[in-house]
Amino acid sequence: MKGKEYLTRRQAITTGLASMGALLFSRCSTELPPTYGNLLRAGDVLTYASHRALLPKQSLAREYQLADITSFPATGTTNPVDKNNSYSEEYDRLQKKGFKDWRLSIEGQVKNPGIYSLSDLQQFPSRTQITRHTCEEGWTAIGEWTGVPLGTILEQCGIMPNARFVNYYTYDGFDDSIDLMDAFHPQTLIAYGMNGKDLPVPHGAPVRLRVEKQIGYKSAKYLRKIVVTDEFTEMLSPGWAWYTGI
Ligand SMILES: Nc1nc2c(c(=O)[nH]1)N[C@H]1C(S)=C(S)[C@@H](COP(=O)(O)O)O[C@H]1N2
Ligand SMILES: [Mo]
Image (tube, rainbow, N blue to C red; front, side, top):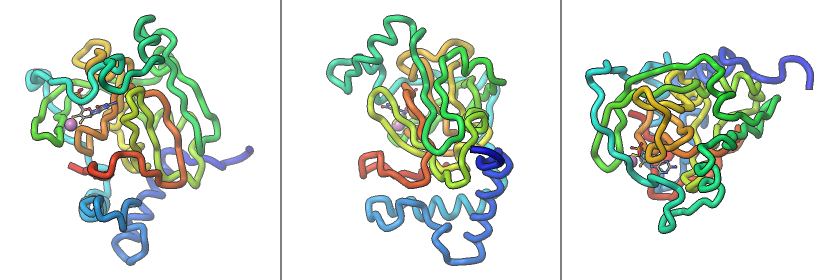
């Protein structure tokens, strides 16, 4: 394809802002999250609509100082080789070789689909941030994350104008999606470092997502693949809200 058939970061954000304008001044469907109509997801409607209306400038999640870092429990899947819990043969193989052969595939509505090794990701300018993680089970913890902003990679891949969601897939099947506002948020990272070290296996090695504007379970560990889509796909089990802005 030729010409400007993909969006730059600025255009993606402008598109997001245009739909927020529509949100404030019309009753068209842009004020509603894609899960609207699903009773089990009723909570999404209010949080999504109010966040998108009240936080138009991509406000940052609060960042902390090194001295604020706390102990950080590992929850959910803590190693996808656990035989009792979503065992992944592929992850087992990758882990045994120190993730040398791990690759992140970026595909879907992008001009340049790509396959990235860990060192490919580490070539991009990195961002380090100390943030508070909030788990739906009621605990919080503060940690330091280093990685490449997801928006940098999406920009590199050239997302198409019809793109609306970023779906992400993991080695334990904890698959989920975010919209482009969160995908291009400057604190949304493909994180490979935690507290100054390589991201350890219990916390999602070799690479996890950090989605600081939402509750902890949107920050998927053990990333495997990213697919940019123009259509919302139901990926989480119904008990989990799709939009969980904090
Ligand atoms: N792949 C994967 N990602 C996941 C989970 C999981 O079970 N599998 N649990 C989620 C939940 S509920 C939380 S609170 C955080 C926990 O991250 P941590 O183990 O680094 O504390 O990861 C989230 N991401
Ligand atoms: Mo959680």
